[in-house]
Amino acid sequence: MSRNVAVIIRSSPLNTLKSVEAFRLSIGLTLEGNRVDLLLMEEGVWNALPFRARTVERPDAEQYIQAMELCGVTGHVDWQEIPSPFRSAIRGEFRKKSKREMIDIIDQAELVIPY
Image (cartoon, rainbow, N blue to C red; front, top):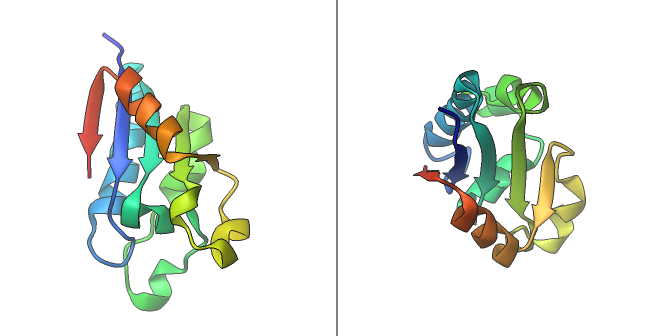
């Protein structure tokens, strides 16, 4: 049975392994035919910027970010949470959304998985 699933990443790529695990989970959820929206909110918005994780000895989500489009995962970022000087660096894999639009996506989801 396929579902409309929202995976919310609220963790910075520097603090924990949660964000990498959430990217991996979102790809895995598509294997059952689920429609997956990956939402970057709060500190999680930093995952939408290019990042050399190996430089600071952190796990790298790059392979999962690159696989998102191929697997049908739609990435969204609360772009207003990102400071102005960094907004132009938001990766193309993520759609820029307002907080209100992000809440609408969450409201429409049948299953919400927060990270």
